[in-house]
Amino acid sequence: MSPDPDYSSAYVILHTDNPSLEGHGHSFTIGRGTEIICVAIKAHQHLLIGHTLEEFISNPGAFWHHLTSDSQLRWIGPEKGAIHLALGAIVNALWDLYAKREGKPLWRLISDFTPEEFLKCIDFRYISDVITPDEA
Image 1 (cartoon, one colour):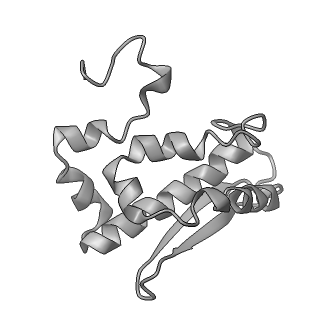
Image 2 (tube, rainbow, N blue to C red):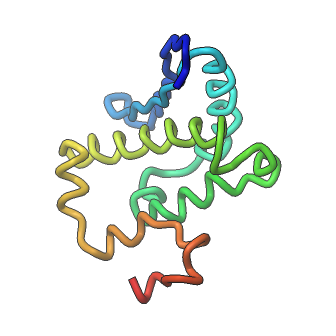
């Protein structure tokens, strides 16, 4: 527990070619250091610019793998600490964008998934020795 929390949030807005469609995401911190999360978000923007929402929708797990595999940023994270919080905000914004495009609240979008769509949300790289996508 933090004895002196000063809760804050790093906030992401993803813009698209459609001016009326944008995705919002955030990642909470206990205060000091939030600016580091913001810098980490900006450091990953090159992994988003030029990509389509369809790339995320078609395989969210593969897109997560893409985001966490930057060869120059892997040494900082990618799936822990500030980088993980930054990527969490980005992915939250991607899910928000997807749900808005479909005209559904996110909970409805996900509850309508087929089993195959659920499986595509998983990056199996750390669990494939226990279960493969085919077995799942």
